[in-house]
Image (cartoon, rainbow, N blue to C red; front, side):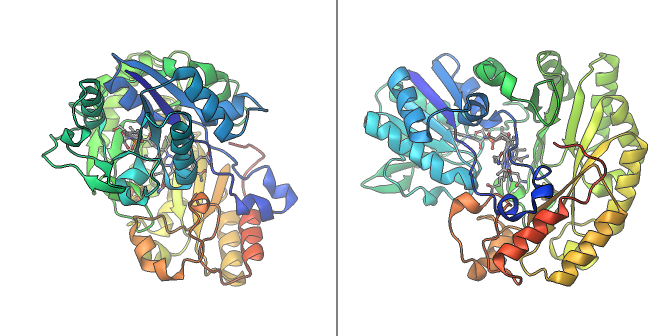
Length: 446
Ligand code: B12
Ligand code: SF4
């Protein structure tokens, strides 16, 4: 079977960037760069087939005058003539993902179009467009493999449990029990980054001359922050990979000197990280490591940060979220603002650059912006990020504010656009968020 897996492009909507003062624009991140680990994982599940993975984000970074999406996908489908197309979907890329399925159907209505990923997990019934044939929620490489097998055997696809299939114009859940599947544990599949070799020169962040890639050490998160999609995606579960599978993967990617751990929250089990970094040091693995670490972990366990710094940890992304305890409590962050200050000290003492992220609620007025700016200037980090507290569909926060939402265009659900009415005028709100990006140490960009 011929299977074409497509990573959709980034949403172009970024009102923080649009309204930011000119001098702040260069610091506002315009794109994130990393491999589609979800697609690579399902590619690994069907590796005996003829599988092509196409990263449109990589393509648009690599080829400045690449054609618009519909043209790009049309050519791709005509070239590969796949039996099945799979697309990975997060909310802000929903519209383009559906557009990809439509183009595939226009070229050949016989192509089976399948969507998966975070948005397919949280809101599978959003895929009302008839161009989408199958939606597979969850960590589902085994289900996708079954689907391909069933199609190859010419059997009815409704026999495949654990997915939604369009019948009579409607998405209907298939029946039957789906076996347990632990993508991080017993069912971990080794991914093959060679699928992405065309774009390796584009996988560079900031001024780094070296390509970077992502590796996940865990899936899910045990915390339950109200604005976060990740714990809802994993129903509050947390799955850890084994130390040795990670050591093997780190050894296997010499072409990527920079590695970001793509976990929601990298340091949950201290013993695990301790063992992992013992092994990284023992094996002499030398990579520049980037990861997401909560402020309370650094504040309460500085020794583990010291050890990880020795093992290559150079950049930490830390969700500060707010400088006010009452806001942090409302978000259920379970970490007071004092942890942010302590964490900055611990990271800096260990020579680690911090990207501290604050989220700005839509009801911030002038005084709130001023107070945040003062706090942030008094606690500077190398890369400070200021995004908008956004009601991502499927989250607790979405349910809390859904009656206030005025913009339902999914392209805007990427933390860079207010989708509820703001207290300050819309442009001014974004301009003020943009201006905050100037408060930082030094001149580096990531
Ligand atoms: C890696 C990553 C990226 C990478 C790659 C994503 C890509 N497709 O290109 C990059 C760096 C490009 C990226 C970018 C962005 N990301 Co991102 N990213 C992640 C991250 C850290 C890990 C995802 C991951 O790899 N998980 C591991 C894999 C194995 O799991 P998975 O993707 O769920 O895949 C499994 C299943 O879902 C399923 N599956 C997935 N795809 C498919 C497809 C088919 C056909 C099938 C059948 C199954 C299937 O099978 C897989 C294997 O089990 C998550 C946070 C997290 N830790 O989860 C955020 C996350 C997904 N990103 C998010 C966001 C918002 C963004 C940005 C919009 C951020 C921004 N403001 O710019 C940008 C978008 C592009 C841009 N502006 O640059 C949000 C999504 C929120 C939401 N509700 O939509 C998350 C959850 C982070 C967060 N803090 O909320 N991201
Ligand atoms: S914001 Fe971070 S700590 Fe909170 S639930 Fe999401 S991943 Fe976990």
